[in-house]
Image (tube, rainbow, N blue to C red; front, side):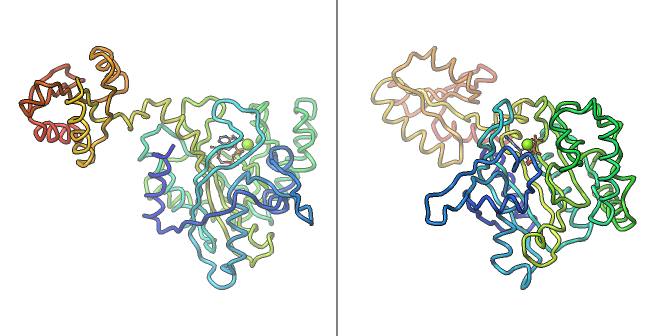
Length: 399
Ligand code: ATP
Ligand code: MG
């Protein structure tokens, strides 16, 4: 998990973004207004309760980051004085879910929000950034993009979905029956029967000229930057405030919970929350799911130690402490093993945790100022000086 967060942090710095720390606890009202009362999150997933203050304020554990970031942005007056902002956040989110693989009640997101940039170049830049992150992590992934239109053209798409939903009433689940009038876009987000949506109206057929041009430009810029993507005209975000570009990154090996990054444009949100009419766009990385994807792809061994230290006897153990410290000072990942276990057990453990080398020190080695350096990949062992061992281990790390 922290490996992914560190990568994301290094990435956002190269994209000139500043950190914003948002509260874990907010007024529930914030999410009703921004996430939207007809979304899954607000309808059934929010942990919300009454505080015992005088006003009996109703508060919620944050289910997502965007509303808190927008609130902070407006409260700081940025929407009026300095609207163009590039921000990121990181931390736990809470949703009342049915826990399963890749779906937890407390999970971690790393998110990015850019304000004051209505142009398609900004959409492209964030998608390029997402692509760079996933490539850097070496996780196999596919990126899907779509445009969900804007307040001008979406009503016609929405209406078409309502008509389609009514025509397929008998095939829809109970949740979808509720969605038809409240939030018909979410008919496409149904987890129960994803196949049915294939016959549903396609958002791209309803785009107005401005939205069409915006989407075409974004795609053109992505292609110019060598980013591979698939257009999925039936992908929508479950949240109300998205406009135009929506996107998701799917990673293999995760089954139903395969979406590891999700985001899109939300040009109406700042104004809807009482700020100026400022464009916005962002995405969130599902850090837990990304970690599962790395594991599934066999890429999770990044933290395997360079060396396991095995000392035999009290005097060698004292010296081994210094050897371990010196290796760590050379930036190596070192694990000091228990001096109270048998050599055979310790060597088996060194292999099991994926250590590259074992550094073995007994009284004899101590007396002669050497160590036994065992290469666990080649099962070869040799006697060398401590300094020489450090050099060999550092070299092996660069391979
Ligand atoms: P899903 O359709 O899987 O429920 P969502 O639309 O609710 O996802 P978003 O609100 O867009 O998800 O959140 C962005 C990302 O955060 C998701 O793509 C996913 O990687 C991650 N995420 C969302 N909910 C959870 C959860 N309960 N546990 C773990 N990760 C989650
Ligand atoms: Mg969800």
